[in-house]
Amino acid sequence: MKRYKKLIKILAGILLIPAGIILSFLIYLTVTDFHPAEKETILIRGNGMLLPPLKNDFTFLTWNIGYSGLGEKMDFFYEGGTRVRPDNKEFAGYLDGICKCLSAMDSIDFILLQEVDTHSKRSYFTDEVTEIGNILPRRCSLFAKNYDSRFVPVPLYNPMGRVVSGIVCFPKFRPIAAERIDFGTQFSWPKQLVLLKRCMMVMRYKLTSGKELVIVNLHNSTYDQGGTLRKRELKKLHSFVLSEYLKGNYVITGGDWNTNPREFLTKSVTSGDLAKVIYPLLDSTFLPGWRFAFDPSIPSNRDVDMPYQKGKTKTTIIDFYIVSPNVEVESVHTIATGFRYSDHQPVVMKISLK
Image (tube, rainbow, N blue to C red; front, side):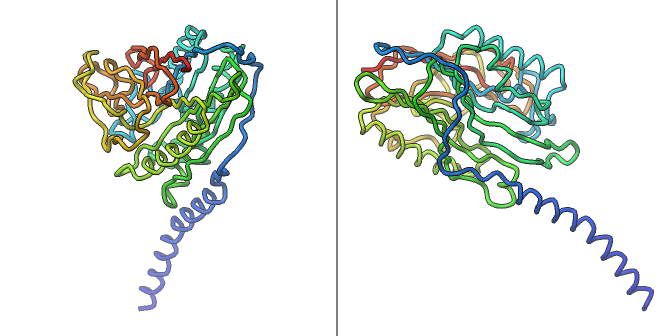
């Protein structure tokens, strides 16, 4: 009997070791967890021009660059694939391609980017804000962090590890103010320790009329069963942009919405890609009378459960703009890159102020 009791104690001690390691790891992540304030002023770097007083038309580009890690050859373990990150050579090629695309579109007034890493294992600890900023030297640079985890432990065979990432704007013109507004949506503990803290970036420009041009860059929630977090984010966004419009301001919101724009139809996609719908759809109560600006013929996003194959990989449209009724949309088109450098394609819009 004594022998059995001793054996049980030894086994219990052995089992307590991994339990203690896991507990210590969770305590470490909890202590170092990213806790953004509800509102934070964003540092404006660079020397962008002053907004010309008589300028009435503007161009925009929105592009989720997938941290230069989700180009055409990549699949991703979190969405049914097997890979965690590209090899170093693939990554360098994707980042170089993104930089060349953005350099070629340097005439665009406002460049809004999502999933831009500054210090992450998945992107070989490359400061992508600096890398992209180097090829856009005459612009301001604004960064709003939405992801900061000391160690993402999945997948167990090859953990993602350290991640620091966010949304970025490279405007030609220097805003009078910029802030990060937290959506206040996050997963429950302990999942919140390794996932994003979503936000919107707001830039303001003073117009000669006394009103403001208000530009919002966002990246809404995904991996959100039932879309609960995304609904809360949209509710907060709805309240914010509507209040700005009621002041007489001009409001442009663009980015990766992780849902389809109102009026999206899969049959409108004529690029030869297989299109899908993401539920729940935005209903008519969300900003009625506002313009949803997107290119219905070309998908802006693809699934990453497999490397990209046109006609086989599922695609959709989740990158678009919503503009206030006092803004005229003159054109909007998606640039067909063949998902070569990212799992998203850039969307360009031209507008004028009524």
